[in-house]
Image (tube, rainbow, N blue to C red; front, side):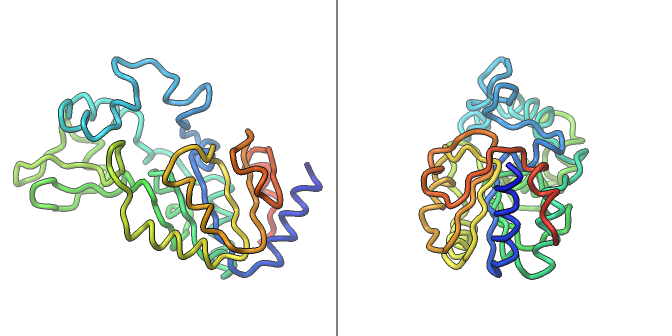
Length: 240
């Protein structure tokens, strides 16, 4: 394992256009549960399956029930960035890391100081009235009683991509361009089973693809380097 981490350090040192693509595993070491592991949200018991609760149809039909789950399980305000978030922000400030593409909605990359972050699935930090489009911050939503409403009377909806909803085209396009231009693509903390996000790897034309994940992924055979280890263990060794 130490040899593989040394290989990654060398690749980082030799690269000047690095792109990081991360999933739920990036934030688990901050205490935020993932979705698909044995302890993840999808394996916990609720009145409805979490996949159903986090769908557009459920949000429209059972808005109050949606917000009970959302406020209980999606509130990331109390969590802090971990070593992976911090090291990535430092790599960006040095000019080596050009973009962070994330499937997470917790805002921890920005909290760590990263600037160029493409949030494929949106963010809990942004919320908008469905009627007049007025902006509301996360504190307003998470501290509200029942369904959060706007001063105009409309329902306030989190700017997160629910099941049955499409990804933001502008965010997707910027992510694709970043991956096309990267010389090193580091994919970490994701099972790479959720489309269309996982399909972004297919746009990579650069020299080195690195996969860091505790478990195997469908793309392991395409990578130059595969590290089956926790991200904290790996990124604490990265020198910035």
